Image (cartoon, rainbow, N blue to C red):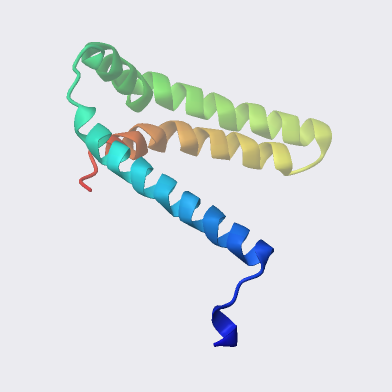
Length: 108
């Protein structure tokens, strides 16, 4: 059975793979226990206030400012890159609370 014989490099690779997968197993057990740790309500009022600001008129005003500044910078530098960055920032500002809320309320 020639194919079962390992040289020193093969043995070292096998040990490294076993150590890696053991680490993954330990990490998955730790992360599973930490998944239930999201019941803390210490900063709920602060998070709610920031979410209201971002999703309300302040967030819309800042988004418009991002786009306008992007357009101005795009005209000044004669490239669409600044406009794309302004639009990307505006989209990110508007969709970030929804994405973060989805990440923290996801059921595994």
